[in-house]
Amino acid sequence: MQYIHSELTGSVWKILVQAGDTVAAEQEVMILESMKMEIPVVATGSGTVVALEVAESQAVNTGDLLMTIEGA
Image 1 (cartoon, rainbow, N blue to C red):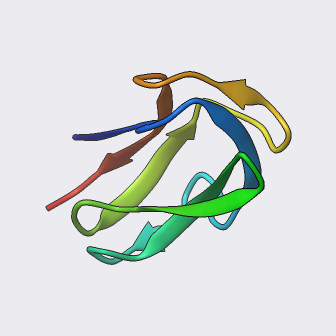
Image 2 (tube, rainbow, N blue to C red; image 1 turned 180 degrees about the vertical axis):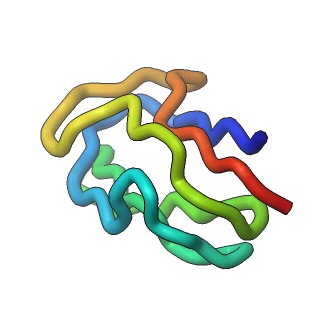
């Protein structure tokens, strides 16, 4: 399992995948916004998105769980 966590405090600007989608390693899966900057979040490995733990426009803190990916 891959647990994707926020590396900063900000908000979820755009979610690019849905539960059930297959993702590749280094694929952008979400974009966070902090201080008017867009910061991409990438999958650390390939697999299937099992759960999204946040919604667009939601505030997040450093270390918050964003999504879970199951796979290789």
